[in-house]
Image 1 (tube, rainbow, N blue to C red):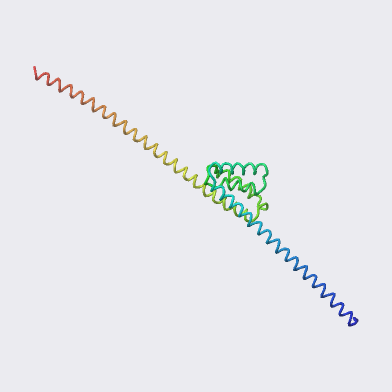
Image 2 (cartoon, rainbow, N blue to C red):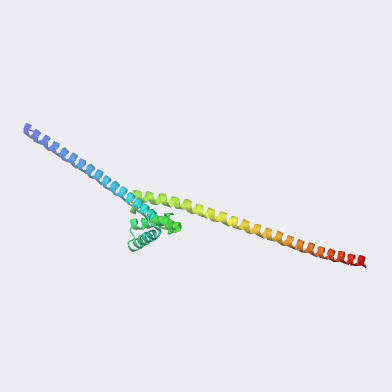
Length: 196
C-alpha cells in the first residue's frame, strides 16, 4: 500500500510526466507550425522573386532585355539549379521581348516539371500555369500558320485562275485584232476598186 506522502509523490511524478509530455507535444506542434510558416514564407518569397524578375525584364529596354536573357541563360547552364532553370524558362516564355522562344520554354518547363519534388508549391504552380499558357499559345501559332498557308494557297490558286483568264483574254484580243486587220485590209481593197 502506498503511504499518503508516497501517493503525493507518485501523483506529482505522474503530473510532471504528463506535463513534460504535453510540453514536448506542444513544442513539437509549435516546431511543426514554425516549419510550415518558414516553408510558406520561403514559397511566397520565391513566387514574388520570379514575378519581380519578369516585371524587370518587361520594363527593360530591348538591349537590357537581351542582356538579362543572356545572363539567365548563362546562369541556368553554369549553375543549373531549379530556380535558375525556372527563371530562364519563364524569361523564354514571356512574349514581350525579342528573345522569346515558346518552344524552348516549353521544353525547359516540361523538364523542370518532370521532377516536381524539387519545386516549391508556388514554383510548381507558376511552371504549370506558364506551360498551359505556352500550350495554348503554340496551338494558336499552329492554327495561324495553317490559316496563313490556306490563305496563301487560296491566293496562289486565285492568281493562277486570273492569269489563265488574262491569258485567254489576251489571246482573244489578239484574235480579234487579227480579224480587224483582215477586215480593214478587205475594206481598203474594196475602196481601192471603187475609186478606179
